[in-house]
Length: 83
Image (cartoon, rainbow, N blue to C red):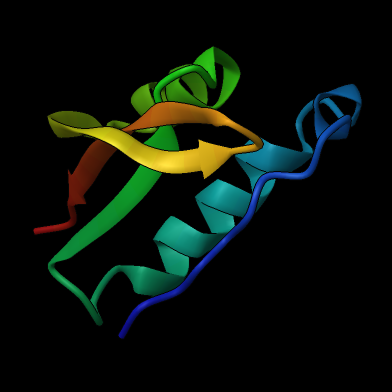
């Protein structure tokens, strides 16, 4: 199963919401899945810190994986083992 979550500009103003949503998602996956894999823009340091604080680890980078306007941005690949 694959779930897609998009970042929303300005969402950092809702402190704690992201962590609560991520925690609930991880809890809901335990016992059903063995691993969660996600992608995050390498420039999104706030999101990367959140994922790392929940135990996610980086396993690779897709150079220029996303194009925004006329600029390519690297995508960081992360995982969390649930078992």
